[in-house]
Image 1: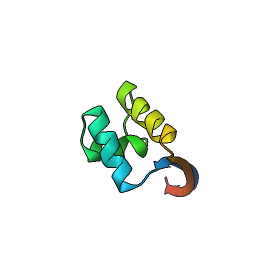
Image 2 (image 1 turned 30 degrees about the vertical axis):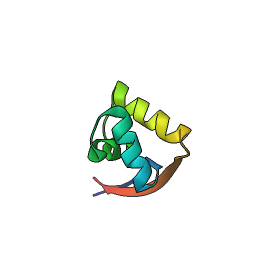
Image 3 (image 1 turned 120 degrees about the horizontal axis):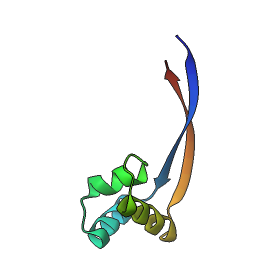
Image 4 (image 1 turned 120 degrees about the vertical axis):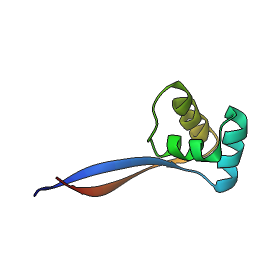
Length: 68
């Protein structure tokens, strides 16, 4: 078994900003959370991430260890 290091990227915003983003894009707060954790891909998640950064969100990268 090997352990591999991977970078996990996300955009950090306040809970109130998540609600604003959800209303702006007509989606649920959960959908916004998935987009900000880079779980979902596509046009809308990209737009959600772009808007979050424009509204003051910060991109965070952390190291995680994955067993293979």
